[in-house]
Image 1: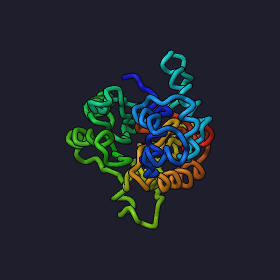
Image 2: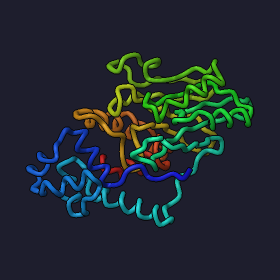
Image 3: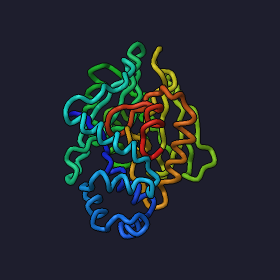
Length: 285
């Protein structure tokens, strides 16, 4: 399947409204933007001037919203810039989410392979584990860990098929590494089969959200952050009212400011990016 940028400016604005608990009427009163225009925004139909006026009230950078829509337009024309390169032993699987109201929405799963030793690590499973199982069997790889960024169905449902085919595969997820969502510790190191991972708790999108940073990909490649829904190209995963600010603070402090800017971001939805690009271009930051 083709891969598309997850959110445009309208989706980012709607996520900011929801995550900050701001109603359409409240936003109209605080900005002077007519209520009907904000209703159009919630349907993805707002004009550029409306988006520009609303952005500051929602804690967003207006210029970055414009740039995000320009990227989506370039993508639609078929002239989007290339993604940053993947390590040669990292493979992405793009699969439909199966949401009837969002038929083009896809989710990404990843396999990091050590062909010399016949080992692999999986990062999320999407909605269908069959392509992952087929790949592992065709390449004669044994999964030495299944790393789940969070438990939403479009990231974890495929785990059933993977674990049915490889029942001894250990599962690494927030609860097993950190315990409760309120745990004081937010960073841990694990090294299944020689893959050195830094696991970072980033609650916000969900209480169990975690990022897995693969710190020893083959040279000269930089670390790879498997971010699930914590961070996308130009956006973040949706949050319930009151959860957006903690989510952004966690991503900023524990990921954007904590790892090399050249680190690759392999998100749960949409194309790959880098930490440097998201620092410089993501409207939420």
